[in-house]
Image (cartoon, rainbow, N blue to C red; front, side, top):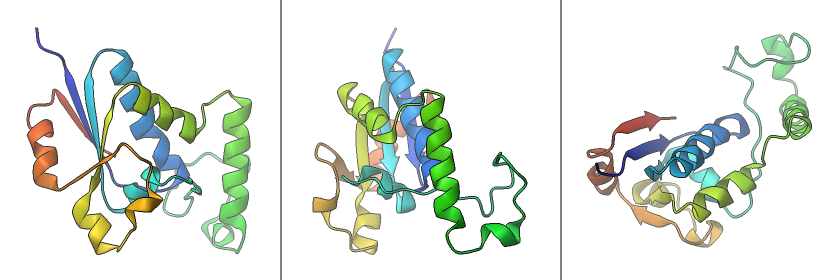
Length: 155
């Protein structure tokens, strides 16, 4: 029986959307899957050396908050930073690993992390901003892996 494969497309660059690709990838790798994450558009933020991500509450009505937050209140200056701080504090109190730790776990487990070259060029991003050990390729290269994967997730 051949090794199972998991392909993930990571498109979001906020704190709350950064966890799923790293949690799923590290778990799959621990279960023996061959894993590749293709980071495109805003997902490229997850490959930066310095992770400075915030929570996105606007447009995310399912986000549980300690108190009801009307949309108008969420749009006030400083609210996103406050909610980010609250989320980080809650995660820490529940023993949730940091994004940096989860990303390091993926690297250690040999999860292939590919930055979309077209998006890097589009946004004129500097490769020096990104962690080392990642690949740069286009969608066609990712499809070589994804086309043979057992599971493909779009996050």
